[in-house]
Length: 222
Image (cartoon, rainbow, N blue to C red; front, side):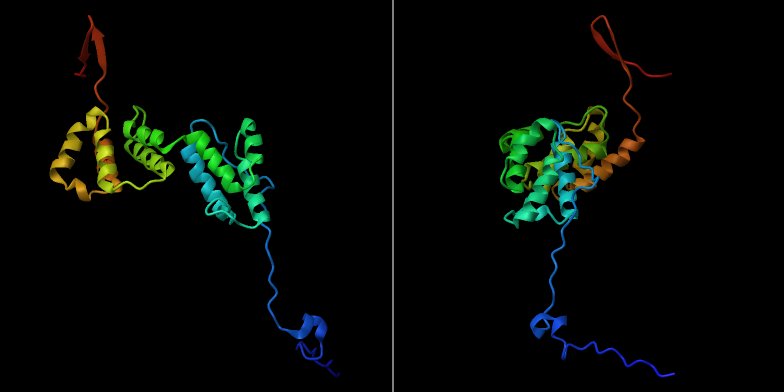
């Protein structure tokens, strides 16, 4: 039984396989789907730092971050990024975002509305203190988030100094020990956080307090 002749796959004599017989590569533009049930965090009055960080990740994952930074991308890509932003704000902000010409303009408008000027945010950073229900690691991350939103880079000693000074009173002895035994000027925020976190795990909660006749007393279990 004879075999059929092999099929000739070369370009020679077959101009229909490649227009003009140039042999050039075919370039395809892949359209990224940004909808289809994808969920985005909703911007509120208090979560801008976390929202901004997460939206940056989601836009990068879809290769759309360039529409925001630096901007100036193709119109199709720009509109896809703008669609994502409009899907991640509350209803009362949709009209404001949708009326922006570019995703970068929309992002900047959100930042202005939620952050205000940098002097205000820097003051918030300077006045920040650890909350009663906030552990060491969470407070450190909150400070880092504020700096990221501020968009400036402070030197490490300044950030570490702020972090140590604003810890609760029951960390005072630990903070003093760190300042005396270590070179704070070379200490990173990550290292300072790790040392205080280790101490936090060993520290007992501060003793409960009671008021009697206008005076504050600390109670101690027998």
